[in-house]
Length: 403
Image (cartoon, one colour):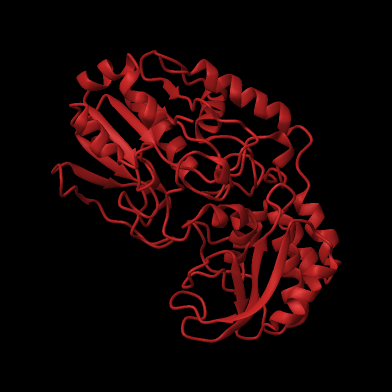
């Protein structure tokens, strides 16, 4: 399998990149099959970017979630590194004065196949800003670590009024598309030119990827794209585990297995594991444990909870599993459980759990004490029309294919 960056040295496109005033939007997982970072790959090819852009967590990937990242200077090249994750929603898009320094933007961001993961939305915002500034965009695509088969889709698209930076456009929670396919889909719908045309979008597609193949089957290592996405196992649970961000349960940040380990000081892990087992949801075992996060929620406190061990990735339903987990946790200690009401990803008027699930329905059902499994299966149910959207996205990516 060859990702977009692997293919770049052999494409005629490289001649245009060499002659362009180049900007690069990248992060730590922007590496080729030899694990060489895009900055070094370009340097080896005789390409000197004018500036770099970094998404959430920063160009170097050091920042924790929702931490403001400041602009800096790349120590190796001396080029400016412009942060696309600041204190305001407007900070998520490249500024006109930065885009004025370039005429081509190269994007290489690894996604993990879940609507909440913000890098796809950073890429889309960058494309929109570049289009307005007359800057051409080339996106180096990468495979979806959760696979690209329509059968793997989980969760509905968001209800009207629930779009945000954890889902700028209507997309299922687990969408089975690549970043290039998603960005090309919305580019085509917005009338942004596709292919080798002025200030449009080109996509350097992945070659040799079987859409049903998950990251464990790739012929290359999984490189963490953000601080709490260390392994392909993390990516498997993330479409469900991220929902914990909308509650006062620890999602395992501050442990060595984020999103797999969950709980709180007041949770009985044995009871929670038994309740999850009673659902007969497939593909996992919930193992009771105690843990002590070193930072973020419940830092320094001993928590009870479970670790979700995925035993059958093909059958596992992360969204359903974690929605049931949240419902059971609230049933266990309703006086101590709460949904997050603080500002979340630039939104302070809608609860985070609602932004993540895509509507208020699941939260209200959990608060009403409805059956956890019924709630879980309702949130998990995909839109019947999404396979057709997938075909539209793949056709858009093909139309944008770089040569």
